[in-house]
Amino acid sequence: MVMYIFTGMLALAVVMLAFRIHQYKRQIKSFAGAIAKRKSADWKQLVTVDCFDKDILELADALNVYTDMHKELEKQYEKDRRQLKNVIAGISHDFRTPLTAAKGYLQMLEKSAGLAEKEKEYLDIAIDKVAYLKRLSDDFFEISSLEAREEKSELSTLNAGNFLSECILQQHGWIEERGIRTDFQLPESDVFLETNEHDLMRIMENLFSNVRKYVKSYVGVKAFVEGDVLVILLENDLEGMEVPDTDRIFEPFYRDGARSNEGSGLGLYVVDRLAKRLGIETEAECMEGVFRIALKVKDPAASSRASNLKRPKGRGI
Image (cartoon, rainbow, N blue to C red; front, top):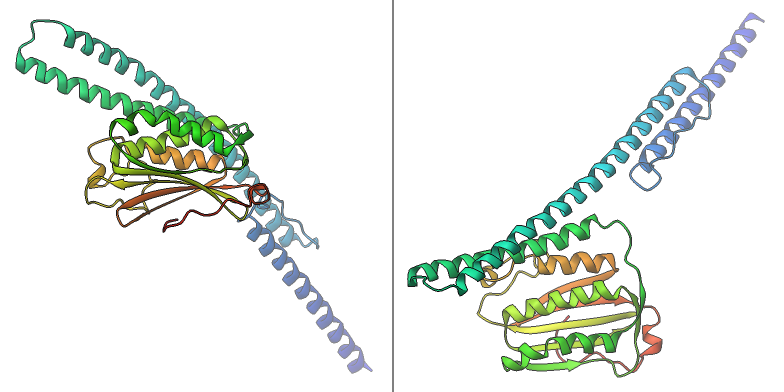
């Protein structure tokens, strides 16, 4: 009889132990899942428990304390990051003012009489260097302002064909003056985009500025629809034999040997940053001496509105 009682108690203990082990394993899995969520958008969720074991409760409490500390650190980081961006934007703005004044005084000195030939040579060098610093400070101010801008760009409806025509007309003077051969293929039917016109215009201005610096004899602008994407392609042949590294072309301050004489190396970086704000994908390639940059604007209704738009013939992005 005692043996039966002992056996029964042992079996009950085994069952209770198995149940407790099962609870522990289930809770550990729950903890593991909660910790894994910290890698995603759900990481801020607190850890919960299914049983009230003292050790389990202490572990859950420790994890939740860690979560609260992480939240506070993230808030402080975001606050410091915004403050730093605003400080940089302010400094870059203040930096431009004395440069503008210095450039003006140097130009006044250039117009004055009585300068020796050597003095005029030195003055010309100083004016060129100040002008370069002014361009660099303008680019830096634009980037710092862009980074400090927290709000999303305000969107409006834009006719892509009319917009691109306006961008091209703004470049007509230097294109005609330098005898540049052109190939413009714009939408014949209406293609409307929901975008920020100011930011998109800035993108196109920077792209044309890049073309103007490095074009040899040809520039092309082409727009066509592929599925639900409007592709705006800007291309030009290159002056000189060196080919840019298209994997790095959108990096800040990137300039290869062919691009070392002009520009700050920030223009295409600004293009990429503005494009990302607008949800536009940027791509670059260089084939057979022709450099191309493509802007891919997602527009779900574009294909139905402009089904007659075909991709231009020829190789490229």
